[in-house]
Length: 143
Image (tube, rainbow, N blue to C red; front, side, top):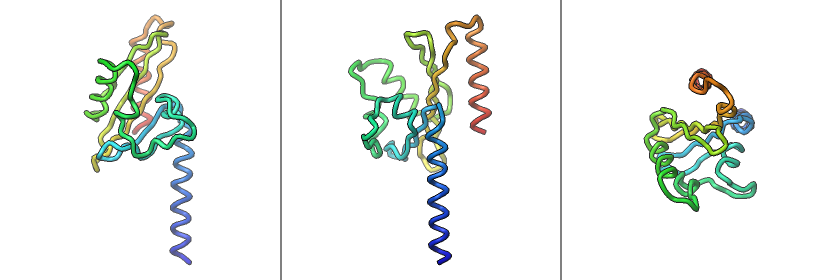
């Protein structure tokens, strides 16, 4: 009976963690050491156009990143993902907003990917200052 209770409690904790991660505004995904998707939250699904009923688990980041416009940008994103240094990759979008991506290598060889949209920087006079403030906030959140 104690063993069954232990596994129920453990499964409950995992479900609560998945629920909490799904509420984050940042796109979050975890890939195993062979670069196969293990987990992604709702924001990641929206960011990469993954349908509600699609099962992306087991697909590589390269497969999820496929674009009808191959070229420098997807290659840059993929290289950044594979490096896994945690350094930010800032992409400027046509609407003036920016997207920040970070990939972190975990000790077991997995990769954690975080993608956040930075809105309103085009309207501010001090865009670089706002970007630094945002990166500082993201760094403090991850500690």
